[in-house]
Image (cartoon, rainbow, N blue to C red):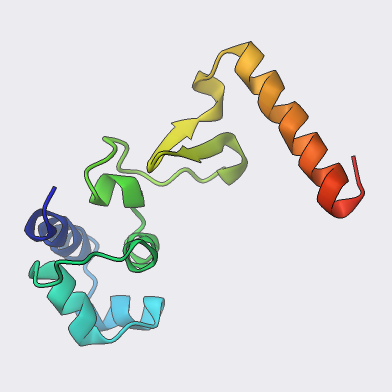
Length: 117
């Protein structure tokens, strides 16, 4: 997906939510002109942290904005979502064996870095 298509998605979502460029600028801490350049597809080197900030502001999945996911909505329960290879994956969609493996990894990381189980 090229920068023009990404920008069009941003613009349509912003308008659909009745937000102004200034609203997004204030929500993200970015300049209004930066948001406008993204919407117009004028920024060729798209930066993921900026896309994530814009996506949060307009309440959409950043992977959807980038064309890497068909999941437009943002999951409310972030504990039930994984991020892999630029795409969001619902934890509940994974096989039980994979869920157990994730739980073991989380326990290991908690113990290693926090000293807690």
